[in-house]
Length: 95
Image 1 (cartoon, one colour):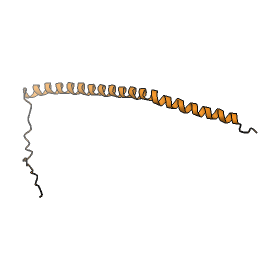
Image 2 (tube, helix red, strand yellow):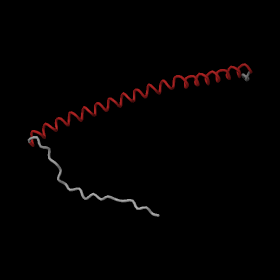
Image 3 (tube, helix red, strand yellow):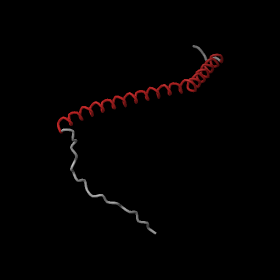
Image 4 (cartoon, helix red, strand yellow):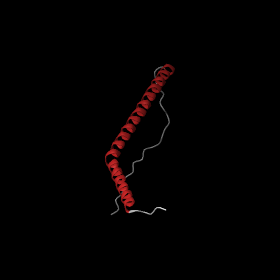
């Protein structure tokens, strides 16, 4: 049976310290680069979705306008629904 030796303990301690400093170095220099890269990718993804949404709305709006213009002779029907009366509230100071 093997017993623990002082050199084995020092070797293990050196490996633990080496791993600690390697991890510390990686977090200090590599982690910010990874975060910046992820932020750029998320920004590009957001811009692409926004462009797709804009193009989709423009194409559907233009096709709706042409069908409305053909059907109604260029007039867009307006809503005649009466919503209600506007009431203005005033603040009352309690003195």
